[in-house]
Length: 80
Image (cartoon, rainbow, N blue to C red; front, side, top):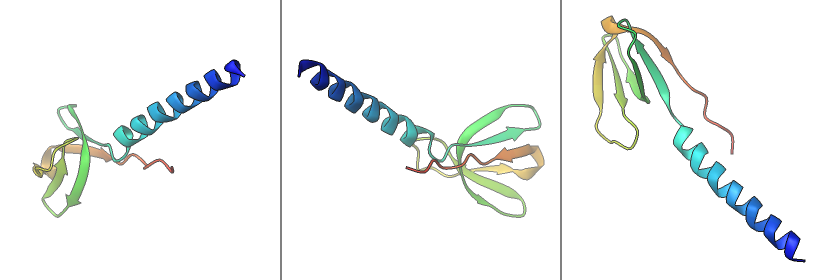
C-alpha cells in the first residue's frame, strides 16, 4: 500500500514538472541574425520591412529589420 502511494506522488510530481516545462517551451521561436546571434522569442508580426517580437515573460513588442535577419525558426506548439 505504501509503495503505490509513493508511486502516485512520484507520477504527480513528474506531471507537474512536465506541465511547467511545456508552458515554458510553448511559443518559443528563434530569430537567427546575419551576425549569427540568435534571439529566443515569440514572433508577433511580420511585415514588409520588420519583424515584431517579444521576449519571454515580456509584453513589450520589439522591432527588428528584415535586413539583419538570416532566418526565423518557428517552433511548433506542443499538443497537450
